[in-house]
Image (tube, rainbow, N blue to C red):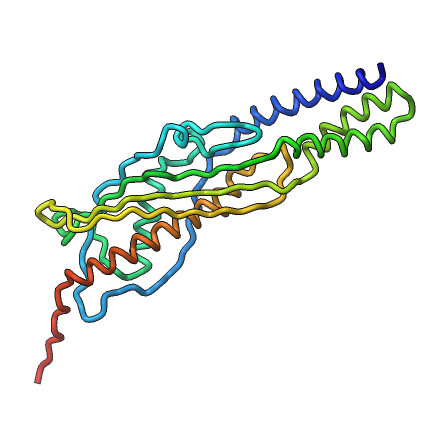
Length: 259
């Protein structure tokens, strides 16, 4: 009887925690994409710096990434409505930043000024978090056992044990797996619109940290993992782009001298 009372109380409070977790995720602040600076000199030596216009970024992510999925065990995030700006714009800004900081090309504001047009297809831009079911069970049992031991009588032990079980799920961090991936296809066209280069690259980051079973750390994990995934994808793409531009590069103009 006492055990049943404790179990019913714990189940009821756990349900409240689950609902609170869902509502907390829904009402969270908009997520920003804090892309880090990283200057690497990839300029073409002895050649004129090509002028490039970033034409467009097309969103080709699967519906699962756009809509997000899950609240407890496997969570795909952020959904589109959680971002502070459209993912295509966020990636366009990251690409422009990386291109500028490599010195490989000169970005121009008008297509008519460009030697090449560069477009991007955003194939993947997302994070995942994986929790085991035992993470809820173990933290609940630890908290519940502590509450049951501290109770003064049977009724108090049952109530305090149930409350402490929920508190355990909310307060005890457990090992949690999380990953991020960014996959992008870049296409380079000449002034006639003909494709001269196309390449896809996937950037992945797999990580683990201690997170409480009910916590949502979307902003922290985006900053920690997704920015690195984009950086890896862009490093792959820009490295391949440099090779193509080097093969097609025009010689640098000779310096004029006066006698």
